Amino acid sequence: MALSQYKGEEIIDSITIKQGQKHFNRVWMPRTVFNDPQGKDGYIIGNGESRIGFDLYSLPQDTYGCNALYRDYEPDYLIVVDQLMYKEIVDSGYGEKNTVYTNRNNMKKYKGVSHLIPHNPHKGAGTTAMHIAIMDGHTHLYCIGFDCDKDGPNANVYKDTPCYNDSKTIVHQTVWGNQIYQFIQSNPQVKWTFVGGNQPAKMFDLDNCTSISYNELYTHINTHDETA
Image 1 (tube, rainbow, N blue to C red):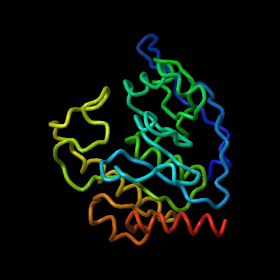
Image 2 (tube, rainbow, N blue to C red; image 1 turned 135 degrees about the vertical axis):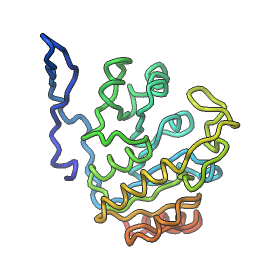
Image 3 (cartoon, rainbow, N blue to C red; image 1 turned 90 degrees about the vertical axis):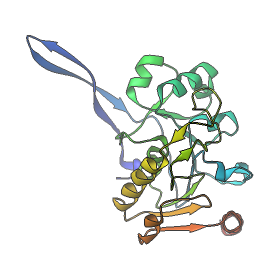
Image 4 (cartoon, helix red, strand yellow; image 1 turned 120 degrees about the horizontal axis):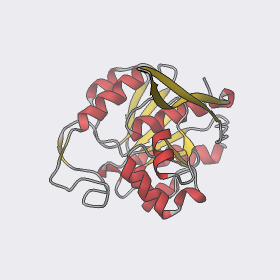
């Protein structure tokens, strides 16, 4: 379902127990972000170190970024699922001028200005960003900064900073890799292109997934601009 058809959704906002029975308190959350991709590619920005050196400002719309990316770059849409990361963003005031997606629990606990993740898949920020881009109607996603082939010392752009583990922490990136792999499998109508980095080889056994270099991405962007 494209987001152009999405009007909002009823969610379970809280649960109360009366006389041993659970009562689900529901609330209607209307759609608050209106984005028409108009045939544009979607650009999903992860925070793996493989994207260091790439000029994010060379990307056209629509960009979907994750977590602390806002510290260095303002994507069109910022996706945050971690509580402490969301609190930092609320405290910064970033959501008052930019579009931030998060879950209902974060909204209730820390307030701030944000938008509900539509039909929340309850995945990591990167996979959730892909989900939102697909909900928006994108059929080709370019994924940047996704380094999820091997477990090992933290290789996040924002390691050793607030809300992130230090550089010595062993991070199980393969968990995210498997999650993304399953998501690609379940969305055969969407094409994925991973730029640089390292991803599980099995991803590229799928008909709808491929990889390119950063030079090839620059060429794509420039060609797209010329033909737009």
